[in-house]
Amino acid sequence: MDYRELVRDNVKHVRARMAAAALRAGRDPAEIELVAVSKTFPASAILAALDCGLHDFGENRPEEGSPKIAEVIAENTQAKPVWHMIGHIQRRKARLVAADFDMVHSLDRLILAERLSRLCVESGRVIPVLLECNISGEAAKFGYPLWGWEHDATVLMAFFKEVEALLALPGLQVVGLMTVAPLAGDAGAESVRPVFSGLRMLREVLRTRYPDTMWQHLSMGMSDDFEIAIEEGATLVRIGRAIFGTRA
Ligand SMILES: *Cc1c(COP(=O)(O)O)cnc(C)c1O
Image 1 (cartoon, rainbow, N blue to C red):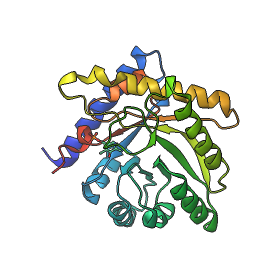
Image 2 (cartoon, rainbow, N blue to C red):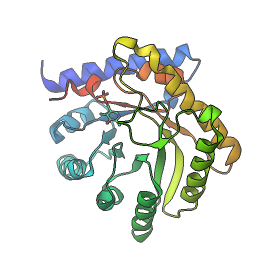
Image 3 (tube, rainbow, N blue to C red):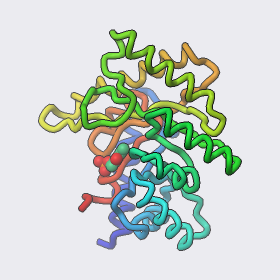
């Protein structure tokens, strides 16, 4: 099968599973956006996905994503893809993010936020951002340390302090939260559900405390766990392998 046909099939299948998960949870499937994670795949894969009706793409490294973005928009001048930065951002790469990306899912520290804000103000734009939260406590994860927030007020207070500083930055618009669940492995996909429900409950706390901010997005769910994430309230799912195939 031609690669484009494979992607088309995969997208159809993923969308059907997304819709079924939404309906199981009594949600409108239209309120969930599919972000196709194209990291490690070439620009040609993104062009194929654009042909299949996808428009939101996620990259995790600015130095890989930015040249690919340039390539894609040079090849397809009609399409208006939306570019999501979903990976850890080194401070010296903030300029690429501010220049090329439409949304950041992986904001995880104030020093980076300040730099990103300054760069966006300089170019006269405001970039929507999600705060990456480490809910599971896995050491290998990036994100604000929030495991155990339900019963540890000091964890929550430290996060509130950070949130207040972030909400004051003129070049950023905080629109929600993001998390990466641990690999379920033998424990089975269901084992990650508390991570997703934890992020949703944390959003309720933030909504109450900071009601002037919408907190509309929960970015959670990847190829192996997106259905559970949708059942728990995801508004953005980040899916790579289930669309583009196994990564090398
Ligand atoms: C790679 C990646 C994804 C997509 O993972 P798949 O398993 O390919 O669906 C989602 N989110 C982040 C942050 C990633 O780095």
